[in-house]
Length: 174
Length: 186
Image 1 (cartoon, each protein chain N blue to C red):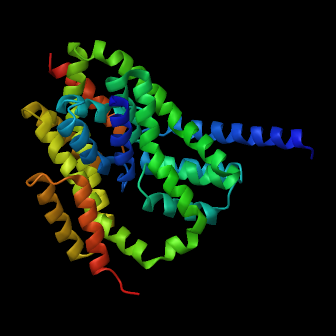
Image 2 (image 1 turned 90 degrees about the horizontal axis):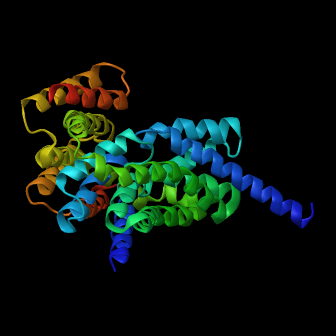
Image 3 (image 1 turned 180 degrees about the vertical axis):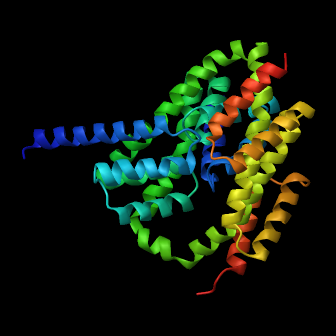
């Protein structure tokens, strides 16, 4: 029963994963953390960080991680396959009439309409990660601001920034 | 070519599709748009599996449909080369590296996560990941929000998401409807 639930939840997440990457976070948080309590806020934050430090899309990484936690190896496979299934099916349908899809006025209007939602979703993800315990005290705030400044002014790999911030964490929070 | 040869060449093609996407999946950290140049290099320039124009069409579709761009692009390229079978092979190759690495981490994580050093690593890295996301909001906002109206809709949706805690799917549906309402008429 829990495996079916796992399948349905991640298929739903895959179906609404517009904008890619971070835009998917609020959906995962709503279903997995708030509704089903399969992850705590803290674990969710850790999954996001781990996703960034390992290869692959965040949606898939989250699916594998949550699936394993809920239903072991079988659970992780079910969650991973189900998050991919809707996108794969949709691409296979759309490639049949690619040109008509690309020039369709309805499609274009919907896609343009989705832009504000994608930006709002990512912004709300940042907000709820802060609220969920991502930044709780002054040292964390300083690390966050410093990372942001480095990110915006230097051409440094985001992964490198994450690792450096993690090492700084190990050094200052003893 | 007799039948055995055609099966053999199909198998070889499938194997190389798998290998290429496995490689792409394994070497693109952070996912998303970072992997596009890598995919293009492999399937357009090096292997000449599809033309540059077809690739651009594929990217357009991948971006407009839901789902991770890696998965969508793998489906498109795999399908182009070898039908539905090719699509499944390509997607499997693309997601396997991340699935394996996360599975390994998940298996051992519960044992390690309570260690002080691990907790302190996350205490440092978590604010940085938030900085990354805020930075993404600025970048994506700059490129996606061209008009005053779009900016206002973004702020309203953000308010609805944060304070009224509407479901993210509802935010997506609302903005899709607004896109149709304010969109160009035929």
